[in-house]
Image (cartoon, rainbow, N blue to C red; front, side, top):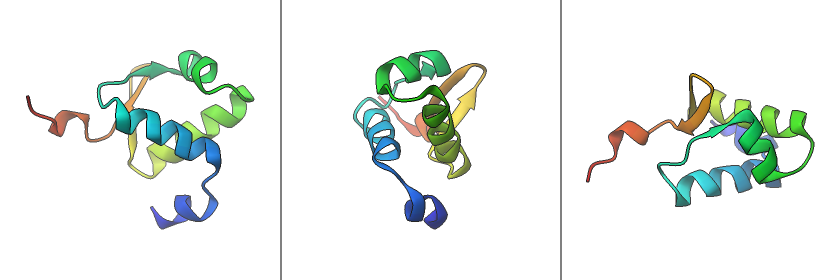
Length: 73
């Protein structure tokens, strides 16, 4: 986790902020690239960094918050 914080970019924070403010958000790679703009490879790399840091999970073709299952109504 500290490793990602050391090299986190504005894009990492932007992606994490979106998932934090909308806990049920689920995005495909293509949707994330459109939403966050920038170069597709940079967006995909940032998403993978967040998965590696256990902040996001990849379920099928979707990226979701890693702790999404812990939310209750």
